[in-house]
Length: 404
Image (cartoon, helix red, strand yellow):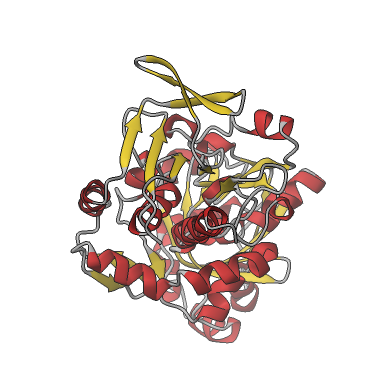
């Protein structure tokens, strides 16, 4: 298809919107991208500050399972734009990648900015127009109305794609403010909830003062019938980190339902209770408890501090102490809010659109990215699905323009 007299406007210049813009422009469509912020892809750049996690190398079946209840919808997106496709796309922009020991895939530059610069250069070469400080304020008489530095501007494209993000990190542009007007258009939107987020724990002042900012690693966290190995970070308010985020959905629902949630921490997941008890049977001698546990059990000071957070004295017997180390039970008393969440659950319900991600209540209007009601843990799954949804929505737009 080559039809540059057909116009598509994409609202939102994050990964989903930019990926759709690239695919549409390659098909010969005239594409304009609107971004309310002064610059594009702010959350993408923030995510890349500590090393941009593009995707994950695990097999596609467990990969798809990371999307929980939305796996049946997200799975076809990943078939259209798989982790292999994403890696090839990044390397096509001159950004070589590598797979870390955890299976996560990163650009060798370990930053988002070089990749974004190359991407914007490609989009410019394809003729994509990017308008920053162009904020959608509504629809009027069949047109789309934008507030811009030059005043109000009304656009009447042949199709529109919304990639407005979820409701986490609102200062970066994803504030969920689109929910009200979409609902007014007859689109059902699930309430926003924080995802990949920290949880409150009522630490003692002594523990919080001494250990806030220190990691617990490696640990295994268990909630219900799910166990996740990884790292957790102690904060003044409680716990955060990758292993916590992987359990954030069931933990969040437990807190919402019961007002609290139970989390069990295994401080030595690589040892059985029996093996650990054997080590703890060695005499303590003149060592302090902290030094002795460091030497014989391999526990860090923060891990020993966590053991002491449990009411009562440390168990005296090796077997009982081993069981305590392998199962420190914490009570989570609350969830951090959307402003501190890495991502959000909720958004446009998945039954509100067709397979091409066109809203059934708004023909010619497509949606993609985190504004849809799906969630996934960190580890490359968020970016992968966002970009894949942009590809699917772009193909949906092309089909719409062709009358399919």
